[in-house]
Image 1 (tube, rainbow, N blue to C red):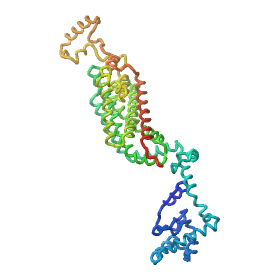
Image 2: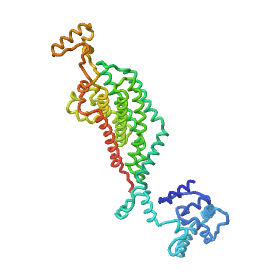
Image 3: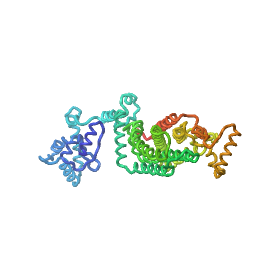
Image 4: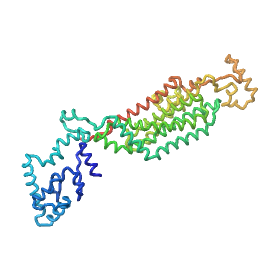
Amino acid sequence: MVVKVLQRIAEGGSIVIMSIHQPSSRILGLIDRLIILSQGRTLYSGSPSNLPQFFSDFGHPIPNNENPSEFALDLIRELEGTSSGTQILFEFNKTWKASSMDDNGGDDTISNRRCTHPLKDAIAKSISRGKLVSGGNGANHSSSVPSFANPFYIELMVLSKRLLTNSRRMPAKFAVRLGTITVTGIVLATMFWQLDDSPAGVQERLGCISISIATIFFNCITEVPTFIQERYIFMRETAYNAYRRSSYVLARSLTHIPLLFNLSVTLSLITFWTVGLAGGVPGFLFFFVTILASFWAGSSFAAFISGLIPDVFLAFVSGIAIVSYFLFLCGFLVARDRLPKYWLWFHYISLVKYPYEAILQNEFLDPTKCFVLGVQLFDQSALATLPAPVKSELLESLGRVVGRNITRSTCLTTGKDILKQQGIVELSKWKCVWVTVAWGFFFRILFYLTLLFGSKNKRK
């Protein structure tokens, strides 16, 4: 079976050379050209079908129903035990080869003409099928020969199938990521259970949303070791032009989508309803889309890091550090308006910024909601313990100062006011989602460029 596979590879245009000891007659019938060596010298070179004629002319005919290869090896062992060794057979092979070429007009036997090709033609055929990479200087050769054996869509299907197969063989990787997201969702759900619309609830919402987004990107960084572990195989295969780098990048991106979808559904279902986020079913769908876009951007960023840094430890630490900086400067810890000017550039390239702002707008754009009533104005101050009548009198006095009637039920802070306080006034929520998706495509392109220019082991 192995030799038949090798035969099909050879018929496909590759040059296959193998060493074999005492082949059976069936295997011998599959071989196109046979070389018998003894102490580094060629004692026979030609088609296996010519062995009976060769040894008959040598004076040692092969008996009927005997394996030609076994007979040849036994005879060679006997000759090696003599004083002259295999010199007589070595000389006979040269003369027999020359006489055989003369008898066939400068060619080998008919079977040889059928089974073998000149080396130059064989190499040209291999290059045309993408089995070898042309390193010659001839412009006419490289211009007429395709660089890859298969079209793009075939490469995409084969690579996608292989990546999915590898994923199924290692279910623990997906299980760990899913378990991390599930545990994080449960922790968030129990910590921020059914948040209200009070000032404290607003702060807790901001914390819950920022932690959710940061968890997504930290979870995606766990993908970094995956490609680095496959890097050697990728470098070896692309060195022989087995497939295009673009095919690999696209196949890797497509096969990750089901995984990212499952993780997004899990986190959305666990956290949205239990935390009490706003928007109902439309709000949930937008929350899910934003979470999916975040996973897409985070996965693309992890792919870029793994392509850029070939060391697992350095890539992992670098990815964790950069995601931490994204969180620091996304606008949650310090609002955009209060950031130092020399950090604003990092604020705008933060991957956490855009999904964070999208979910905040989904949460606080409802014009019917009020997040700070007059009676709640003193909740986060030293006046929170004052009696209710005293608070009412203070509100009336404050209203007279500002020229506005302020009572216990007066709405002092709406969702739009909270967004302004957070510096979220530049992009709409859907634009934030599209920017997040665009970041994902941008890092996929960078990943492709790192593979294109970072793998300079192309065979010459």
